[in-house]
Length: 302
Image (cartoon, rainbow, N blue to C red; front, side, top):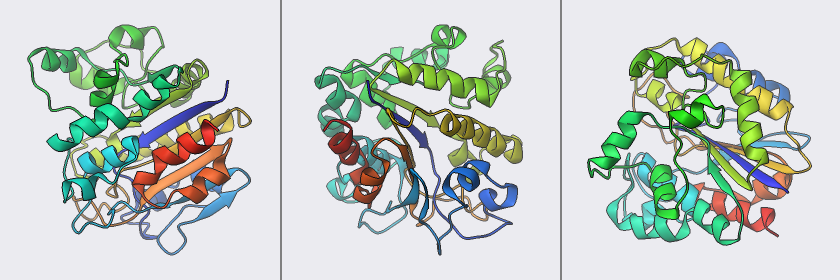
């Protein structure tokens, strides 16, 4: 079975070639350099190497102001221009009037309706499920999409079995911040687990949020260690991808991490990269965030 592996990196744009404030240039990023032929920047945002395509996606969606996660993520996962629908950028959670759109058009739901298995690979800690049980409903686009579509949300049980991943890849912050006593795994081990999960499903999504947290100045850890861990994770995935059967897409909702001189989002285009099956066709279809879902549906279900 052909499959789609989507890796969502929160708050990653294509920025300036700035070794001081752009972490990709400050620390290097082998995944981009070895698989795509370089590190993208505003003057050279398009990279291609064999079946690996890296390119910008407009995150402003024709609406003034800084792009925000709520409308950006609805645009990605539902294939609609949510900022235009709402009349403004909104976030971090989805705007209330987009909830019916999320229920009907989210990518999990549409693929399930075609009779395929889908997976959201992230695990959530107990505090998240306590929050849900309390009746509160401020959820991210992806967790809301899963709940509205009957997609399983993983717990620590799946994490311990190697059937899910934490949003920071290695489990280390779950232990440090949440008091768990999980084995700390390498980025490569996490990547192996994600590829194994993907092999059992038509569509698999994994989300990584520390990039956006860093851009906002809310990450108190070692930035170099974090970005190098992400690099190792992505490098293993691209190096071991079944390119004849899998479409792997990296996408983001807005710029932020690529310019650490400020603590707000940016107007930079969102980083997008496609590899493997149908990569070139999909890359040519995507001009802004709202095109991502439809491009995947068009070519991966033809």
